[in-house]
Image 1 (cartoon, one colour):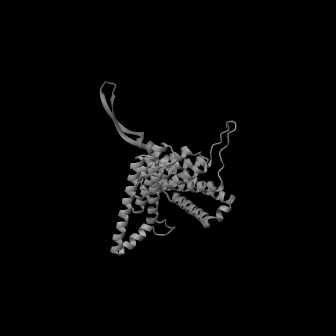
Image 2 (cartoon, rainbow, N blue to C red; image 1 turned 45 degrees about the horizontal axis):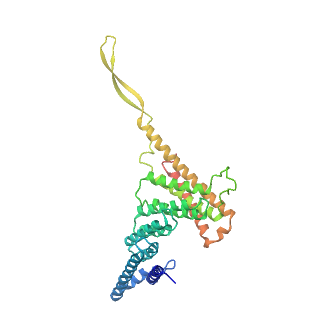
Image 3 (cartoon, rainbow, N blue to C red; image 1 turned 60 degrees about the vertical axis):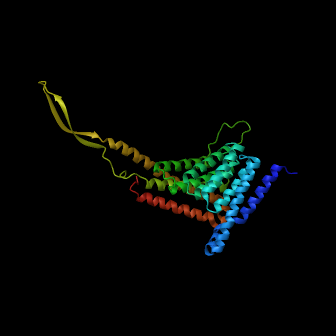
Length: 364
């Protein structure tokens, strides 16, 4: 026999999920979302529009009533409430009410962290939905913060050689390149470049782990990546290499390509005491090192090293990805030709980068 607590939770969840399923039918790839399709029909028919508005209003009222019932029966921090809030937030997102969805998801996240702990795995699913809601609302800074938190949790929960960590790294890298490539955080070029370099380091740590020669007795060496994992990581790293090279070449400060004279001539006057003890002024031209030369040289070297490294790293990543495919021909024949198309994409990016590097005035 179910307890009163269980019956309340089951009834609320069943009612809300049935409502959610009816109002937001999952769409097949390429289909128009259900809510949008209904709204399009309603826009052409005033009566249909009014009916749809009443349905949405009634649905939202039932969601709110169910949430209030759970809060009254179980308290505002019961873990069961988080699941209900998650369904409610998904419904709000379907309606395009992203700000409202974010508020509900933040409540669900707080309840989950209180119930399971600050480093619990249970909050990852809530965070992923929250990131999508922030992105839909174009709250890129908040989405970035939550993406960092998801990756931080995955690093704590999974070993660097685990499949779970590899999947988390690939998702994190895809998000970061989207944000950096579109400059969605409006950060300086230097900060963006450092973010890409940090991402490259994360890929390198997984692709080429350091072997510990002093493994403890009974300790196991790191798990070897399979062919698909290595290819996916190399593909992701190549995209980061391209982004770094492209960003670095486009963000070179104006005037850094023009040489700065190492020495400058200055007309200098100084007081000189003659043999008779009289002070006289003697003037002349003196050749001195240009104080701006050192700063120019350091900046030029920094950008030169970064651009050259990115171009070379891109070439290495593309060649390494091709080598993995040569060793694993089954990868090429699968996924409806997606892998060959990706390699063509990488080759095109590599050719574009090398062309831009040759044409660049910063070709050192």
